[in-house]
Image (cartoon, rainbow, N blue to C red; front, side, top):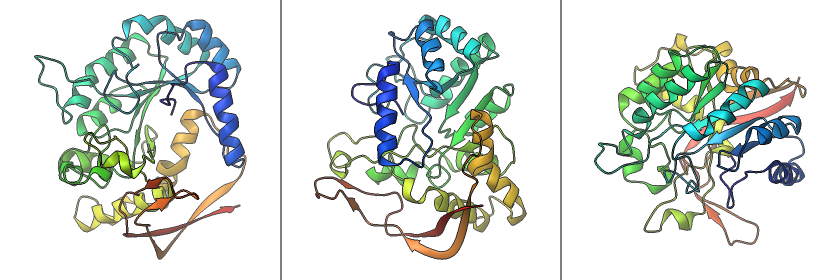
Length: 316
């Protein structure tokens, strides 16, 4: 995600950041994005494509972490979107409207309130590849389904678990967009096992320091990355147990699509490493907290101290 401080708005910054990430983990393919910002031009898009940058991420102004330079109006970016269509780049969208005076928009309605804008962008730029990231509502799933094949959506492992009651009493479950109603969670679970290539896992994992989750204003983000795959399986099992899903809904083929195949196909990433995920019921316990080597930074994982599936990566 490019919402660093300062945000990644230049090709050089993106490439330098990718170099830093690859030094930390050389066996991971990092797909880089720019932050949609007034300094982004059609020329920037062309240069970014030539440098191997995958897309541009749109954040709404003031809604989530480091979005103070986010989008106020999309009209000024129409030439950028036209250039992205020509270059076959992806527009990744954090789909919420910020609360506005005189409008009935809250954290629970902000995503649904954004959907007319989302659909208008697809109508204006039908060849633009768009991902509505970390969907949280049945309305968002319906909107994505109504669009053409150039539009997809990601679903997080934590949104497959949570409803509003979970984050309302736990700052470590607070993220944006917020988890919503049981009916919304049902729609996310059903989309995850639908086999529809429009929907795939996007972790949106955010390792905010625990101290920022104990302040007067909580940082928006949930840390799932060490156990994201296991958490998806846990959520689907919970869905079966509660009757939201049937056991027959969850097949190996659908899991492979949701966890890897659909996303790889949409991004056009080839399977060069020929890896597979091996899941084992011999559960592992999620740490209560994690600390940096020097002890100065503490992060509290999602579903801390709970059991989850053991996941191994193997070369085929």
